[in-house]
Length: 300
Image (cartoon, rainbow, N blue to C red; front, side, top):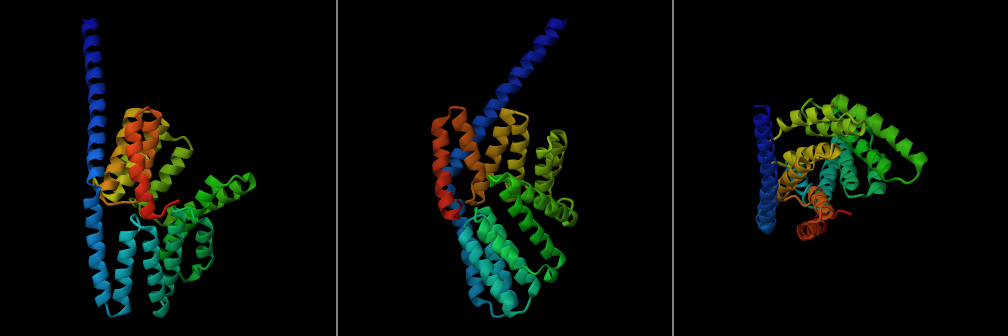
């Protein structure tokens, strides 16, 4: 009896393992297909951008001009960094002319974020130094805290000077605390900050629980879903669950392609993992695609 039960359990374990392998093959096939047809998603993104540009041409007052320029920044943000910064600079100019000091300073903080995202850390810091914190609203402060947190986190990670690492880490922690105190409970960036903190502390059970909560608050296939999936990959990578980690990084890359995203960090990661596992052909295919995207996005 016990032998039969054991055999039955082993049978279902084998079936489950086979299913997981097939799921990976399936999602890789989907990713391969979408890469071939990526131009249609880029065309869709460009159509939206062109419509916004036409709206901007017709806009007469500064309030509407600012709103449309800001929408163009949002569309370009994951697509083409230089153009995102261009429309932020236009927003800043409009805010200057309108004497909207909060918007001027918030644009500076967002410009800093654009620079940090592409490794321009000196420029990111210079934008932050121009900000008058006293002129920021509560929502503007959130953007400022985010920019400070991101810059100092990146500097702490990349610096080779140990004495500076602790300074950057302390500043990152300072702004992390300020940021978490301001962000709504289910804000995607709040989930990112908290998950990074928990992963760095080795609290994997808590971080996975948090990620599962995040999963229930994002739309499948959206840009936010891609970010959630990337963090879910990190969770599984930390506990060396290869099947699940590859599934979720593929989900992240797939959502990025379908959203016309050029900042293809997830695709880089999956390519590196596939190279390490010996799938050189597919890895090369993904790296080539990602390199082309990086040239458009203007990432270092």
